Length: 293
Image (spheres, rainbow, N blue to C red):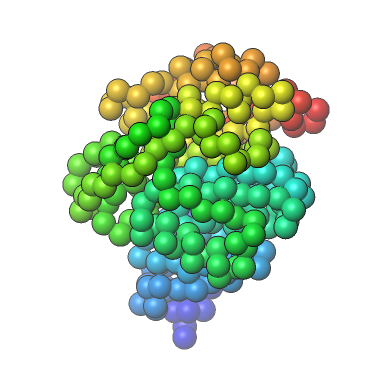
């Protein structure tokens, strides 16, 4: 009982103290140290009423359970989503971002969530059903990229969120390769023009953006949030600067931000510097949607 109280206290501090993301993660990890002897699979009710099942042995699941996962992305969504908005979540994992988006847009909006890894997609569907959001969140078990066809992906044991087109070796866990279907986002005619696209697919971000050319050229282009890692360059992927230039080629109204600081748009020089960072999260905002406009 005492350990449970310590876990709850650390989790509360992680969620509520005005600290950096890194400090919140450390507090969440401390909470897990006190609670790790409890059940590894845990059904949690989040502050906004969502119920999700988490595998507490997995780092990403723990950060979601303690609600310190993707703070800046959730803040960006709150700024740019409203009732009736349409959202595309690429690399949806177990549905944390998709379900939060569903709460923001209400029953008149839609979330299309793409997750190709079979066991992760099963958990995604379970969380959608658990929250009775089947009419809002639509799950798709295939990949997105620059062309249609088959795509070989690599997953790592039971760890969600690491499935990639790149084989990164055995240090991440037992590797399992599988083949799935891939489509261009442009070619899925049933999707409404989105207001917001989140892309986190472990190295396929640039390919997904290339396959969304028509959506980005639309008169009302979406806000885009995507993950970048310098690791992908080692596998022959393009730099962050090249991806941003591609987006500008599709629509020159976009401005780029480090998602942790939305106050100042990034210059191309700063984008070139960020290309060497291990991780970065980039927000692409059309001029009409800039903060304060």
